[in-house]
Length: 606
Image (cartoon, helix red, strand yellow):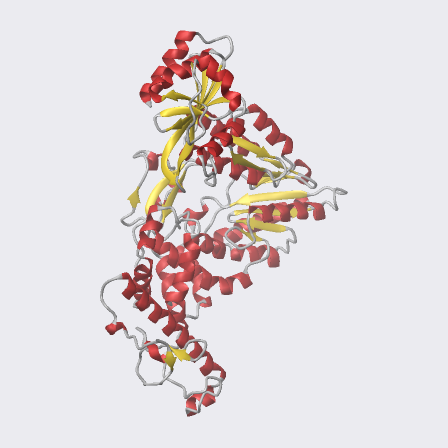
């Protein structure tokens, strides 16, 4: 029970008042049982409330130092000041304790989990979340924390790249550290430095570039030029010693300084775990892999701290361009940057000075593939061709989408014996839906309405699986049955509404049943007799053992068929049902024997 607070002078949870002045029961870590999730929750509660009390005491000491030193009563809390609850550290007032507090770790864990919750490492961490966070806090406070082995794999799109992915536990630490360092560096970064910054994504950079084009060309009234450059093998050439010299002077907290140095100089290639095909790593060019980097150089692609460190490393370049070159129209996205000017010769001179600065200050080289062109040609930047008054989607992006669609069509759609069969595999369709949504998100920021209409018309098979919402610029699945349907007749009506031109073979137990009076001609074609009165309201039915023969008759009769299977899950007393496949006969090219053989073969596979 909650009671009035009595200051016993003991380091227990009873000394931590709640917001109404009441106190929790006396609980100490030693008094908590050693097993069970209840004990874990008590320990976590103890840690969080103790840290909250510690912050309150620290704030009071900062605001009223003289009163605290003299031991005068705290008039706001109505009691004499109490000593803070001791922690692992002997210096309870240092800010490092707040950096590694359970509350701070938990907040960044939730942020880290938002996009990684379905990964195996995130699920393992979440299984014992409280214990893992407490163990992580202890390791950080005692400085025994060391990053776990990274997972190395190779991505194929948009180009061949080697990725070293950190363990989920280490990702939480990355979020904690980057959040702390950003408090200083976000005030230092220039406005037009993009990538891995809040509100500074691809679309913001493209919009800014379009505004620059209008300004340089006086809204199309005069010629303008752009110089597009990037760093050669940037992540593999970052010098860790230079990076540390850039970071160290601006880190005042000792714990943050220790953790930053640990992560900067950590070699993620030690003990790494390789995933993927055995020959993938050998296909990566030697100058693009950390496994062949010079000692003391290279950061892994894919980690949050690497992206942040990359921005810090090139911040000097940004400041040089703005304050030494005095270029008013400059923006950078990671290692790809643009300078705009009305004078072509000015851009040429800037290029030489940039090359010298990068080589002498940051030990970097410019990629020899550069662009110095008129703005009237359009700027190929971040997947768009950017012009003064419109944007186009880059041809490479369109070709990549077409290649993905061809691959999914080969996976989902087959033509056999004069019949086109559309498979409805939920996992494959979910991935296809994600691909389409991603590309649509890119297309809608360009003048790409006609482009998408031509793609949609050229891949008519997509209309079998998705509905296109032109107003919202999105596709919605046609195959996923909503769980709110409360009886079999509603499920059947939903299928008929989704596929009005197809005969629905709707599985109910060991039968395939029909529930609509409009199915009478189909029943006549199949020679079915009306069923007697039944609780489900089924009008006609076919035994499951005759499925192959029934399907063949419908196909030979020129009927399109959609097959709905009964699932395992139970929705409020009614079984889940899923669309399994749809078969559409090709008119004039199908014989009866071929249809029967194809249908029988599918039935045997089923």
